[in-house]
Image (cartoon, rainbow, N blue to C red):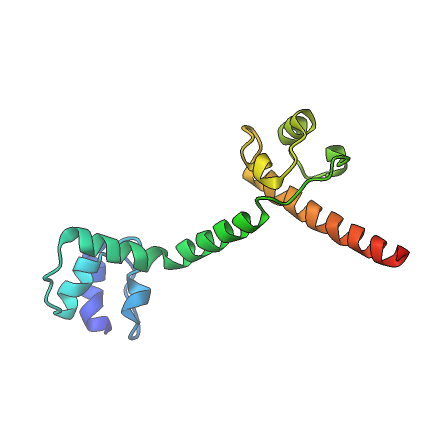
Length: 147
């Protein structure tokens, strides 16, 4: 409740709350510590410091960790996505000039190989993925039309 949280909020320099707010929302604030929340709620704190730090980290960064995990899974699926031999990197306007130069020079055969080329930015990897997905759809549609 605000009367429990607001004195703590003032002490740690975070904004007070005007209405009852779920603890899971409050713990996401950078200044708020799980040990402090346990103290103001009167919950017995028999936890070790490293346990509290871990629980706090998971609470604060759960959404970020989930997104990162989803991105990692997506990348694992596309690791072996083949890059056509005849790809013209000059025709991909959003690529940085450094990445374009590296890709032209090395001529990677898969997206996984691209990800391991020093100097190719993560943003350029994403741009290349989108380009390859469009390229694959175009090729699929053209092959269906000629069947």
